[in-house]
Length: 165
Image (cartoon, rainbow, N blue to C red; front, side, top):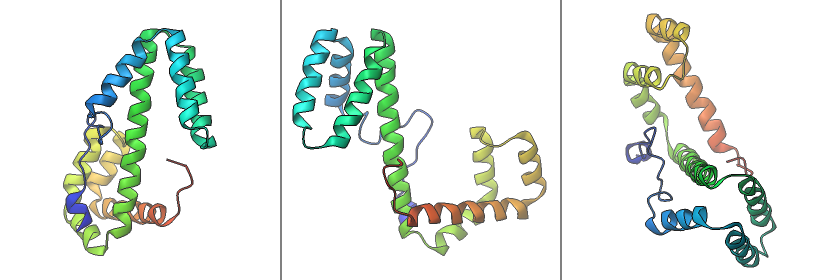
């Protein structure tokens, strides 16, 4: 069952194999510590490596343009944000792939735990106080909402993603 093996992400747990790679973390730190001249040299090497991939080149140039406007501390922070964005995109792709393999039994497991799911959603701050009160006092509406979300996620999983993630 695909949902049983799903990775659990917590607020600070976006490592998805990218951020817990010690070599990548070291490379990011080295890049953040480079002088502008050193960065330019690395960028030229990367451009050569990706010369046959115009999309990656465009992304690289956009990132480099943004980074060139930042201080060293800001750059390190932005590199971390970029890695987190990549991790989130990876997690979304994995989740959509998992949903493609999910079935009605998985939905029913979620519905059977709807009170726990609601408490979890409340803890994330993703819904307003009014919604909290509404769903707590109308469990059938919360179940409808979960089924609606499930349907939307399945629609997304069934729709080919074109560089949206």
